[in-house]
Amino acid sequence: MKYYLAVDSGGTKTEAVVHDEAGHVIGRRVTPGCNAMDVGAEEAARRITDALEGVRGFFPDGKPDKSYFGLASKNYYEDRLIGRPRELYRDWNITWEDDGRGMITSVLGRGDGGCIVCGTGSSMFCRRGGEMFHTGGWGYLLDTVGSGFMLGRDAIRAALRQFDGRGEKTLLYESVSARLGARPEKSIPEIYAGGRPFIASFARCVFECRAEGDAVAGAIFDHNASALAEMTFAGERFYGKPFRLVLSGGILMSYPEYADRVREEGSRAAEMIRAEIPPVYGCALENVMSEDGFDEAEFRKNFSTGLAAARGSRDN
Image (cartoon, rainbow, N blue to C red; front, side, top):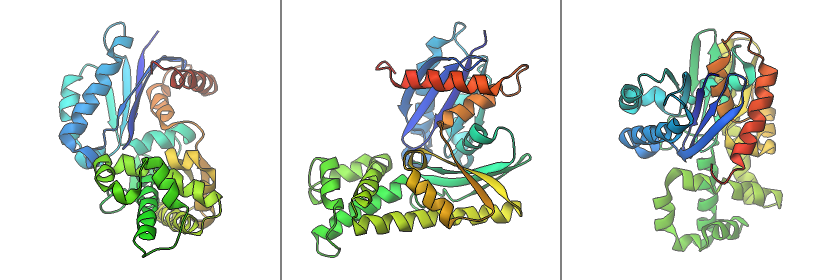
């Protein structure tokens, strides 16, 4: 039996899954996110090392036969981010890629097409043959439209605007307060200390309050969905013809109404397909798709079942 390692790392978490050639999940570990835009390249590199050390015990020989690591911000930081881990694990046969490629593969295999990643951050990747095109995702200080961070930031800001008399009364004030366990105007140090992933966790307040008919939450939803949909027109220009586009990441996978709005407002040339399996599955596919006798239907079934069981385990 061969041992493979699939790793998907974004702003909030790093998910490492050990699997065999048939998709059976052997082990799983979750560690903090490794996005260098959040924590800096040095800390992100340390977290990469922690993630790899966390799964070493699953391999009889102390290393996998093959590994695929999908890593947010890799395209920007490259050697500063993975230089040291690549040297430490040079015998692990690791393919290092940005997180978009694996997300495309998770639904489209090796075919042409793109994906919008929308979780803590957001961006769009498009693949055509061996060429990759990337738009958006310039980091939360510059451009992370429609993301969990933007939704969460807008929710907190709306709550604060109600408090200081600049904004409308909104259910978001009580929703944000409940999530904080305190009033937002009394929690500024905690909010700033939590950073981008913590602020992104307040995105759910927008969806919950919108579902209750709150107008402010509805406006936040509309604005961010439109900004995310705008990226699809860059894909239209890249392909110059109809193309397939995977909608992936925690926000788009958790809130189908958000994905539906992006479809409604996005390019008519894009056939948008909402992902139903986590991005780490695409990383696992990248490991094995070229193996002789590969059966994707069986692999997907085994991996999905095993991952669900591993995610339900208190040990993981």
